[in-house]
Image (cartoon, rainbow, N blue to C red; front, side, top):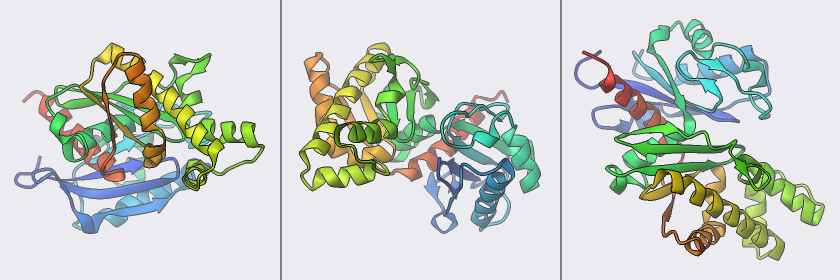
Length: 298
């Protein structure tokens, strides 16, 4: 590895975007002028998706080539081999069965051995503990939950975060993601009002404008979250929970209900809204790579 300041690229692959930035692993800081973000058509053919990712990554290499690119990636993916198993999630369907590390290495002209992939929820939690809302919990056990188009979950222990993969656990007659994702909000609103909304941001504004039905839906979502956190915490015994993802931007509308459910179940546990958002995924991807590096023999 390079001596002195090690500059590594962190990349966040989202359902509608890619974000990339260089990170100085000595100072632990993003190199701000390297930050690039692009919208991505997740329904496009594999060649188009890879080309969009590659363009963003190349634009971010403002200081010349790097030795390592570390990705925060949604699952399911085999993070070691790079093979995508995403299917039925309305994103990246055409990547199914493809080796993303091979495709990226070829398109970038980059050594495959320098590409690393980690679960996005684990990167989010790692980043928030490293530089965000949970810095004071760095020596504790923590859990993290991301709420968006899907449900992400992670556990932090002994300095590293790993995916908990709780999206598919049995919950209220279905699976957890059925009740803790964007589609639950939009489906519930349509069920109650007959009106289709584009997403949670629009519904949040309706709630903030005082609509009783919208506020009730957020409260109901908080009830679901509280029960889910209780079940998760019973198994992991964390000191606190970090809540992130796009839905968490409306945390004031549902976290009080979730905490009320936890108290009713006899559990006093802080729910911490994410503080640094997308930046957490970039820093967390690089931090996870750093932890992986330190574990290697020699």
